[in-house]
Structures are given as C-alpha cells and as structure tokens.
Amino acid sequence: DIVMTQSPDSLAVSLGERATINCKSSQTVLYSFNNKNYLAWYQQKPGQPPKLLIYWASTRESGVPERFSGSGSGTDFTLTISSLQAEDVAVYYCHQYYSTPPTFGGGTKVEIK
Amino acid sequence: QVQLQQSGPGLVKPSQTLSLTCAISGDSVSSNSVAWNWIRQSPSRGLEWLGRTYYRSKWYKDYAESVKSRITINPDTSKNQFSLQLNSVTPEDTAIYFCVRVPELDGSWAPIDCWGQGTLVTVSS
Image 1 (spheres, chains in turn cyan, brown):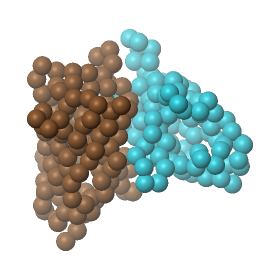
Image 2 (cartoon, one colour; image 1 turned 90 degrees about the vertical axis):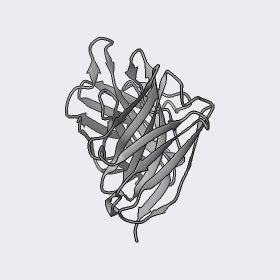
Image 3 (tube, chains in turn purple, green; image 1 turned 45 degrees about the vertical axis):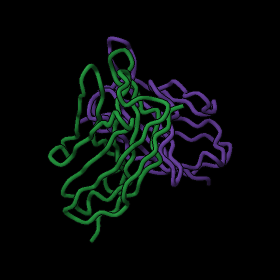
Image 4 (cartoon, one colour; image 1 turned 120 degrees about the vertical axis):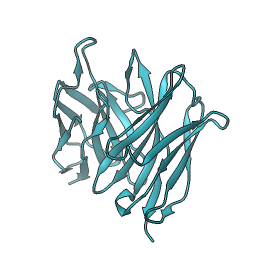
C-alpha cells in the first residue's frame, strides 16, 4: 500500500496569510504514460464529508476559489491557501488514487491564529 | 447531479453484522464508467478505503485486505443502490461510514467526486 504522510498535523495562520500543507507518498504517484500525478486534496469541515479541492495534483475543481492551489510531482506535493479566509478552517487531506487500495494522508487541521 | 443517500442502523452489537445501503440518484449502479465504493473514517484509522463494486459487462468487486474476510459489497440494480455488509464486528469497527462514487478515466481511476452524507456506526453492547 502507498503510505501518505502529511505535515504538519496542524497549523494556525492569521487571516489573509498563506497556509502551506505538505504531503509525501511512499512511492511515486506519477503515471509515466500520461504524465499525470494521481494525487488529490480534500477539505473536510465538521459533520460533513470531504470535499474535493484539487485533483491531478494541481487542477482546481470547479467552483473552488483561486486561493487554493496544488503543486508537486512524483512523491512530494503541496497544497497552498494563498490568503486564508475564516471559511477555510477545516481539516485537509491528500489522497492517492494511483493504485489500489486508494489511501489518504492523516490530515492537517488549519485554524485561525 | 449525482446524489448518494445512505441508510442503516447507527448501533451494532459486537460479533453481529453491520449493514448499510447507499441509494443512487442521477447515475446508475450499472454504469460502465464509475465504481461504487465504501470508505470509513475513525480517529484511530483515519480515512480507510474498504472496497468497491463496478460493472464492466460483468460485476467486479475489490476489497481491502484488512477486512477482506468479513466484507461484502453488493449492487442492487432493481433499486439502483449498493450495500455494505461487515460481519463479526468489534468496537474497532466503530467509525463514520461513507459511500462514494469514483469515475474511471482513460482506463484508470479518478478521484472521488461524490460522497454520501456519512453514517456514524457504533459497535457496542
């Protein structure tokens, strides 16, 4: 199984400041035949299922604000919130769908400083 | 717009069977371009994929090794839904269970694009 390791476990950021979350996979999630990284980011708020933010490592889902961006390739990935808003308080998860079983990171809790 | 509506008991006794159903609207359980999955979430195990079923001229099922001996996922074409059965449950199976849809693109799986509302299942006597 591919192990997904997120860091930090939690972070507190001032409103309007940048938040950066890292995700490392135990093996590559980049398919060479199509040059796509099979890596997604989800946002989860209390009492709700996760919501898809980013897929193919850097493609923003329709309706997701531009302040959310994803980057990275191979085994190292980053989710950046460029200017934190109050509604961004949530837990964020990375997720690999490169191989079965699909696996998730342990989550990063983002709070307001 | 695809919607998944979960139903089933929130309390199951140890050693008994956990049973949940996921009703699909806006898509078909027999679609040949998606898979129907179950995922659970708990503080101790995080988000954990349990298994899936999908139709490609015949029905396929894949299960996580951790629950393979205890799990069954079945489609129900007459009701356009799919179900989860987990046998011989213990308190470690206490979790929020989600049904989800995963599209298939160009011969490989895409990310989860639709979630059920989640069902908290507690295993306790």
